[in-house]
Structure formats: structure tokens, C-alpha cells
Length: 308
Image (cartoon, rainbow, N blue to C red; front, side, top):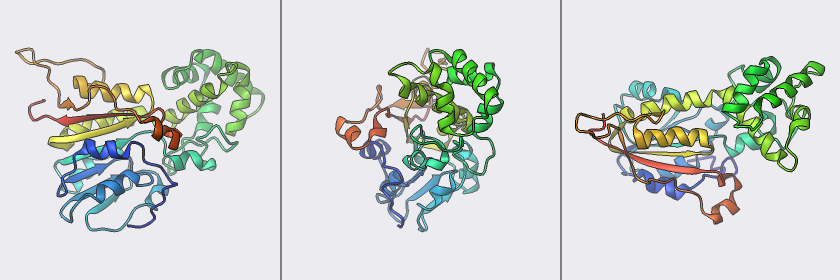
């Protein structure tokens, strides 16, 4: 294995993820969020030559962290297409799936990507650099209602419409091209002493919209049951309540909207059995070592044979 760059992305709750997968050395595993390869390397090291690891990442930067091995496969695609790629590879089902959602440390730290509120760079926020839909396009073209909708839904802002009105007012005076210009434009409506959280929520809303993250996550989650063998493990780490709610609903109730389907005898029909009823949280020691672990929530479930 090569290019073991620990600075690309420090894997969050690494041991907890490995424990959750209950790795069979001869099994087939999928890491749908390869990134810097931290979680993937640890999984791969537990596999025998008979085992197999398949990783997904749509970010071209991530490919540099891949390595050559007969039982390692890098898929340069969005994980919304999980089932299609497994079918093409002739794999009907796998033993475990890991998803570490959100933005990698590398993407945050690479200022030119425009993910961070810490620098003044072009408003980009694309996880897939091949696309042409950027945060700048949203900021310049969405009307007040559209902006308010994403600020409310994806940023969970207290005053989404007020924020949208201020943004449109500012862009009418001068084109907003950079992260710094966006923050300057919204400074009049940023809550006093809570401006850092406010801007983080604005950036989150734009990032989710640019990458259609919730739509992609929904598509992925709906494919997981059919992609796992009986007793196969689904291990998902989320970083905000919108993601965690979908994961929780699927694992607890068998649906993304939280609705429950029962059989004739009143038994809840669901494809998963929760391993941990409450999310696993990072330790204080880990948060001190890696501040990006702070908001992480880990959920683990087992595929049940008669769940559908």
C-alpha cells in the first residue's frame, strides 16, 4: 500500500467502525467514502488474500490515496450508484458497508475548494470537480424563496428568509464570488457572538445543495439492505442531524421517513436490527486530538434475513 497520508483525513472513531463491521478476513467489504483511505487501510489490513475491499469516491483527489492489490478495487463514482457497480463486478451481496459521511479534512483544508469559512476563496464546494454546479451559482441565481428553503432545510437557520433577503440585497449591489465576500454580505444578519456557528450553517446548506447530499444519501441507504448478506453489517457515521435522522429511521423503523410497516401478526417489518440503540459518540480524548470528530455520531446495524 502506498501514499499513506494521515494528514489527508484523520479517520474518526476508527476502532469503533472496525468493531462494528465484525470483519471476516475472507469477506467482501465496501467503504463508500474512501477519501484519504484511513478507514479503508485498516479494513484491508484485516483481510486475507481471499477477502475483498471495494471503495467509492467521486473526488479525483482521493484516487491518489488508492493502492494496487488484486483484492482492492477503487470505484471513481458517487455511492448513490452502489448497487449498479456491485452488479457489474458480479457481486450479489457483501459482508459489510461503511459510510463516513460529510466532508473530508482534505476538502476542508484545501482552500481553493471553498468549503471552509476560514479563508477567502472562490465559492466552489463541489465534491466532484467534474460537475459545473457550484456554490457561486446558487448564491448568484437562486431567488429569495429558493435560498430561504435551503437555509431552512439544510442549514437549519433560525431566520432563513431574513438571511436570503440580505444575500439577494448584497448581490444586487456587487457580485459575490468568494467565501469572504459571502460572509461579508451576511454579516449584518449574523447573530452577535454566534456568527461562527451561523456561517458554518450557511456553508453547510450551500454544500449540501451543491452536492445534492441528502438525495444521494437517501438513494444509498435504500440500496444497503439488498447489498448486504444476512448478518452483514451497515456502519454509518454522520455529522449533522439531517443525515443522522435518515440513518436512524432506516435502522430503527425500516424506512427513511420513520413510518412503520407491520406484518399480519403485528411484527415490524424492517431489514435491519440495531446493534447500538443510541449512537456511539467519540471520546473526549479523540475530540481533543481531532476537533472534526466533535459532531460525529456512529450507528451500526445488522442485516436480518426475514426483514422484508
